[in-house]
Length: 247
Length: 247
Image 1 (cartoon, one colour):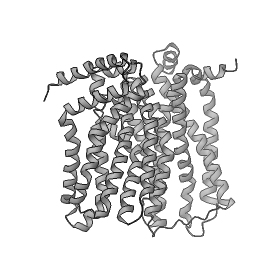
Image 2 (cartoon, each protein chain N blue to C red; image 1 turned 135 degrees about the horizontal axis):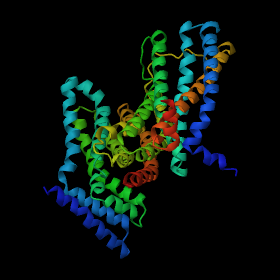
Image 3 (cartoon, rainbow over the protein chains, first blue to last red; image 1 turned 135 degrees about the vertical axis):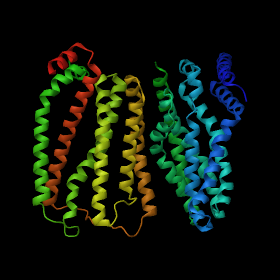
Image 4 (tube, rainbow over the protein chains, first blue to last red; image 1 turned 180 degrees about the vertical axis):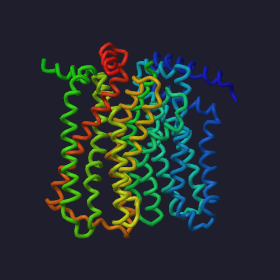
């Protein structure tokens, strides 16, 4: 692993490269997306931690409630969803942190490109390295928790849509608390109530699938929530970044 | 000239001096209305045919629940005014509204639980309205926690205003989704006994109590705002003079 200094140096160089790319007429959003993805992929441990958390806590569940397959099958959709929510939340604390500390977040607020797209790029990368693997991993955990086979596809789809909304909503909280020294629990406190609709429709979809009903309605609502969050949450997060960096 | 009152309202000093004249009126009106409404509702309104005397808790429960929700909107609107017009006093009102709103939400939840025991046979059910109120309470608590986390008041003001606005956008979505969730899971054992219409002999004392709670809310809000104004402005000449007189 690289030293903290080295990882902190990296974004500054890349932002400079971005700015150069924009001067040549390169689209800023794509450049930022590429930079962020590269940075995320270089910090492998940060990608693995939410996934390990997800798996570990779900492995503890049977130890807590007992190994009866029927009970586990009953709890599986809700527990997988709640744990995916927590894993997303915990990984979100660091979303803007290193950029805030090395000052590149402030540079982004000064950039000619709207801050909205910068936030959107960061959140998209966060989802690619957290939400997407979580969703991909969920059928395996469903298998371990004895989830009936009818629920797999729905669980995967609902998590794909839902974790993206969670990433977007959580970005607002992360931006609001980035100036604080230890935001961990506070971030959870302010963001969790806003996660409620996503959780309700996510588990609702899986439950409907398990009961043999059509679940396209719930997925459509999850997609609608995602569309709304994609339109509004980066705006709010951009406002929060301006507040946090204004000192 | 027409906007003069608006700019004056933004001055903490003007507010402090003016509001001292409003306080006795608000105190008198709220005490009178609450006393009349309580005596009327608890002593003279007829018993409910199905619930007996236990229904009388609505005279506290309903007004508290009303103001808990209205208080959130008041908080968010004053936060928005503060963000848009950079009005100092507006932020102070927002900060003052948070603990009062949280307290009222708690009162609504608590009285609901006390009423639920004789009526439903249990203190707590995951009913749609109770759950929504609980989430509203969590939103308030998150707001207070965020405001306490910052060491710089200005930063806290802006961050809280943004969070309040995000919460405002989310409240209808949360409410609707919880409603949907409840109709999906509705347990058969609970039946709401209230008929859709309420008899005037019960309704007028309730109206009196609601009016009394509104006055009480305004009174508490102004008192709290005045305290916060003094806490923030104690270095200014007028405030230190005032505090010196009090000594």
